[in-house]
Length: 188
Image (cartoon, rainbow, N blue to C red):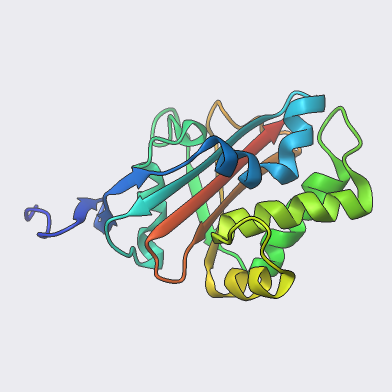
């Protein structure tokens, strides 16, 4: 095969994948995982919430390969033992519904935060995934979420329980230089 192209990209399975630096802080991880916090606190849930600055903008078709280069615990083992990765584009409304369902109805052993608090937790996760600062107004969060490229992902790894409570969301910023990831799983 030809050598990788010069610049901030490296080749992975034919896709041009940018290098990445993790920029997750504890506060950011907490904001990202707001919608699924009740899974981890009141049930058997496990959450991975991370943010990466990318050296260059990946094309949509390079997002799966990019996810695989980030060292995500939730994707460990993809490519081995028939552990397949599935990634698809999803509209921000679908991401919102996934987050709201997780927050309001809960995981395997809890009843969630219900309506108003569930909406708040989902909103906090959506804002953090979209890269909006804490305390921003609803119009700013909605506008930024609409500008992001959203992806849902699932993997047949040991990390995901594959029962009923699995979430994999990734949001690529409008400039395509920030990738936020939220993965969560719970089991009975």
